[in-house]
Image (tube, rainbow, N blue to C red; front, side, top):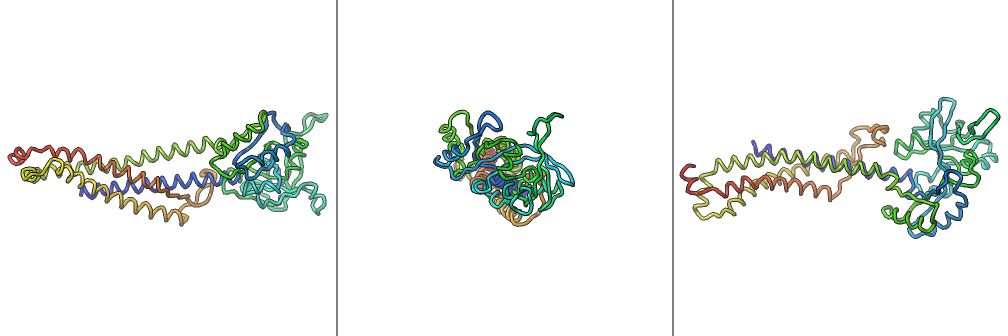
Length: 389
């Protein structure tokens, strides 16, 4: 019974480790993909605040010549208020160039954003705005509805500062899969953003897509080195540094905590071997009297414990893989987007290194648990054991 419980304990620990680490790895990978779908990989800005990034077309041409840069596009970033006939909500407004933004961020490829100039030539004089799906739900608007963009960068009038208000037509929605983005972002044509923010022919910065995602920092440094002061850059890892550090720390802590389950099972293995040594004292003594060395006696008990550990590890590995497959292909539980960032099924990603680390840790713990009982068995004096056994 103790042996069966030991195998079950090891199996449970290995299974829990595999499932939890696979879910956390999948969560991190999926989150990274969604973040990069709504964020640039490198962002170039200029010291001096709004309206200081002038002559951006020359800078854009210079940036696109940098090795490792795949595409670049200008953008305008501002916090505004959106007002519909059914409500109001704060939002982050991004003015983008529809022709080049889709090459930098894939989620912006098919946005319908006619500018005010294009709108005047059509039946509807209002320029277009694209809202995040959750933001549109909060405002209770559908495609074709009118919505007002209220900017704090207004003008001074006889009655004081008056915010700028302009009507837009909802021309579509976007869904990045990231709840925070879908609840916050609104996109308009960069020309309209320049007008409503009173920026003239300037922008907030440049969004850049690079060829190698993990070389973004080096490419950002090359760009700033070429442009010099007052330009500065941030890559996607710097923009989300705290989030990914927290995820990494959480993975490590969960690995340590769940390894304790295997450690508890290892104590069962040690206790079963100690009881075996006590019950087989005479047999051990006879073996040693027949010429068995301490090394060979130790091997017997280490092998016995490792068989228990290996069986438990294999069973746990099998169960873990089965559960991961079920979680990956079936929507067991609907996730709340406002808590877990996205609303799809539970992300699962098994990596060879993680599985190998779990198996190695489990077998190492089981091996260490066999050392004390095996050493005690090897140290038995055959004469004393036969006399008093």
